[in-house]
Image 1 (cartoon, rainbow, N blue to C red):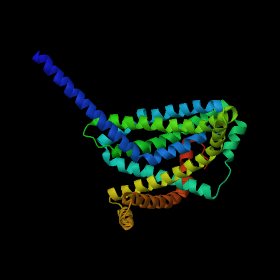
Image 2 (cartoon, rainbow, N blue to C red; image 1 turned 30 degrees about the vertical axis):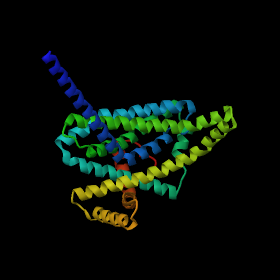
Image 3 (tube, one colour; image 1 turned 45 degrees about the horizontal axis):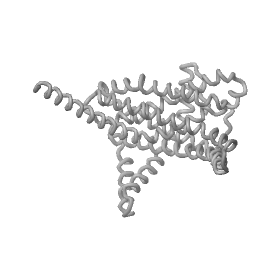
Image 4 (cartoon, helix red, strand yellow; image 1 turned 90 degrees about the vertical axis):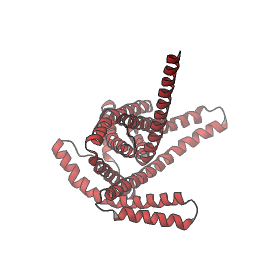
Length: 324
């Protein structure tokens, strides 16, 4: 009997430890996911463009294919690669973060330039005019998964830098949870956004009440504004997150700590001056100044990327340089 009681005690202790581990993983995953929120917002804002121009019945299958590719990017390729780097070459994590941050600044600045000097995307129009829909779908899905790989790499690297765990396996599980959670949230949200106008059309046409039909018309009218809002938020998030990553990396590596320290000082002084909502004010000022830095850095990188890096990559691989 005493042996049975001892066994039950051991089982209870193991169960408590497992429950604590689950709580720790959930807490760490939530913290890491929040840290990567800026990139997640941009991911959600960017993806809907890949289904534009296709028949409504192909929208969800395309999103599902991209989501599967995103999950594979995170769990099969990036997860083991980043864990190996963290174990054997941790000094490389900060430079990789900074490289990804610089890329986010470049993308964000390019979107700002495009908004200030808009031009028609003739490449997209030509694609839909000349290519078979099935072949075009394959190209769009492949392109979306490649773009997702870059954003996923940044998300997973940010998450890895945020996770604090004494156990390799808990770190691996937490990173996997973050990757899976973010993929589900992003592509679930994208699916809802993409199909919301169809839901609105259905309600407007078949609603049994005037209120239902009005709601449908409202959804149809609101979706273009929502997409425009998401694009603005995504661009701002890219500049803010990218600028912060680069500035923090410069400070951590002691290459150029002055900008990071100056922004922190300005944000602290601003929060003290207002007296109320000090935490929000400090965050907002920091994010705004990080975004300004990100925009300046991104604008400086545009000619480097478009005139040097992309043509060099195309020459080495034989691929056609992407239309910008």
